[in-house]
Length: 254
Image 1 (cartoon, rainbow, N blue to C red):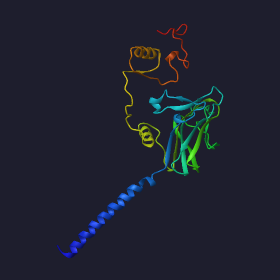
Image 2: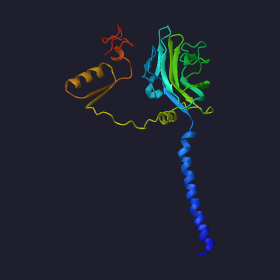
Image 3: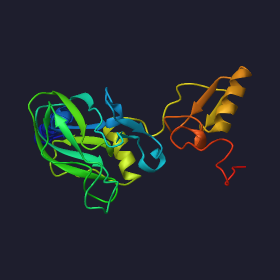
């Protein structure tokens, strides 16, 4: 082996080590260059105020949402605190729906408040279906921020999620399965939920049959999980539908 060839081999080994060092350094620094973002599922607000969690359409929506059912009187604000990764400029996206489309006067508008300052835009007054409404650029000056949903009319304003991103050109996906996968990625949740508990008997649906089956199974000493997608039990006989269990007059239910 000639001297020149030996020097070349030594140089290449040193260069290889140097390249590995720089690649490792870059990988370690990658999180510093990741886009700052925060996704807030509004049903996770610490205080729902007068807003209600509606989970009836979770198989369509992919998520529960908050609804301001005030029967014509604005409900109390939903409030939470968000911890932003960094201060700076973020674009806000609000997933909402104008449920009275195509009527020109929306019945369910609401405001988003940041540290008690309402944003200039009104949400829930445009669009014909669920979508991400652009809330514009927001300047975050403190990492700890108070957020509020402020109902205006009390006529069923709807809000699904708030998404803040430092990538001002990014538009979140609005249809499943892409949106569901994106939500899990941002929130850091697994694709398949982990099993936390074990039960002997599972009842899905809180109608009269589900209620009776759950009680009967529990009386037999079984460990029962009872899953319901509405705030009240009873199915058609519940307080939100209010059909008598003996059937309506002239239209008996068998």
